[in-house]
Image (tube, rainbow, N blue to C red):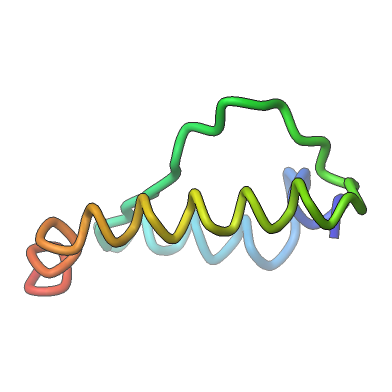
Length: 71
């Protein structure tokens, strides 16, 4: 998984390039995490905290996400 996240080539990069070329909107809704968490962490406490923060962030964006869906 760490390799996939850091890839600078391959299928995901080609798909992104195609989407940009086709002018398909891309939105990255990423919560700012207070702690630095390594990509290869196996600490369940850190992972669960990160998941809850991400869920709370997305729930706070509910109206904005609805607007994006309408695009």
